Image (cartoon, rainbow, N blue to C red; front, side, top):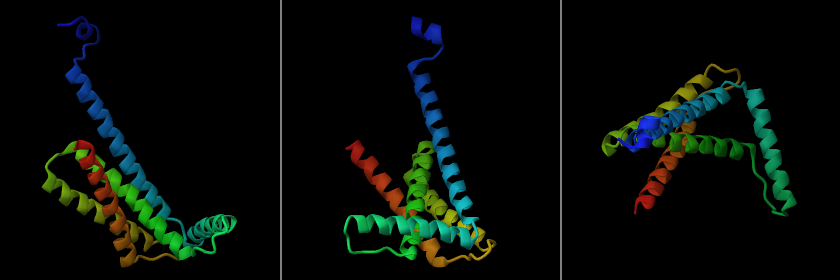
Length: 163
């Protein structure tokens, strides 16, 4: 046994396993935290959610104006972009988390797609009970597309990194 192993009690293989375990735990925490963030945003009443959207819309339009770009964004565009972006991040995190635990590609694709659809369905279900808000099938589809886009970009980037 080497002096380093005697001193620390950890072999290179054991350190790698511990690092992988920490990475997995970090991904789970990030993924669950982000999904909770999405659900938390869904619990804001329509009036408060609308204020946030108007604030971001005003920021975007002021920025376009300062850059002398003759365009304007609508609150609707901001809301839909936010939906897509939230689920893009969610899809990336979910895919990375699942792949940290499993390597069987067929199993993972089904699991990815299942969770990428489950979360927006739950999100829209939550909104049914929030004053002034409702659920929308088109939002579920948009959210799912954002998640799938995040998943595909992550998988493509990983494939490129391996080759």
